[in-house]
Image 1 (cartoon, rainbow, N blue to C red):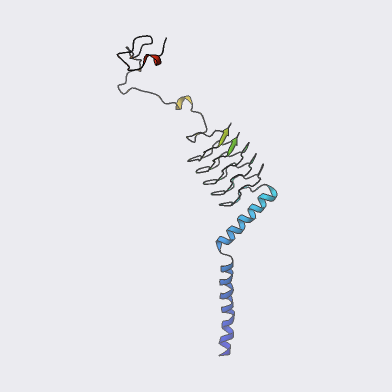
Image 2 (cartoon, rainbow, N blue to C red):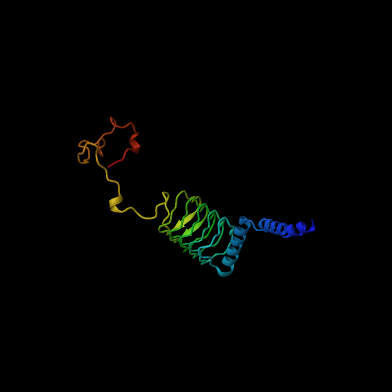
Length: 201
């Protein structure tokens, strides 16, 4: 009877040790620790190339000239941070909060900026060439020298991209032979407008 008890002891200790180690280091804790290490590396070296910073809190951080190329900052809090001259080329910032962030001379080229909150942010001379910019919040933002527009496009339309008007009947577009308004002509029968606001020629 004693022999069976002693033989089972190593098996029980292995099972207990294994379950204890799993309870101490679940996958989430390991990922959180890795992200905390990445934040520390960023704060010390001012660079974190292609690192995982998903959902981290970097609010009010001084990241002037930081190298964050290819970093994954999905859902990160960068509100009121100073990113002057920072390089976020190719970074993923989907859903990130950049409220009040200072981005003068920063690079967001080829970055994923979908659903980013840029409200009250300052974007002066920011490179956004090739960036994805769907559903941006630009409320109260100051934008100068940066290719961000309401529609999210960054490049001006080329001549071949401009809309071409073609009449449905296939005829050439021509001005009407008898325009409804002739400058200087009496307009009483055409418009019911007080005479003082009718344009004078």
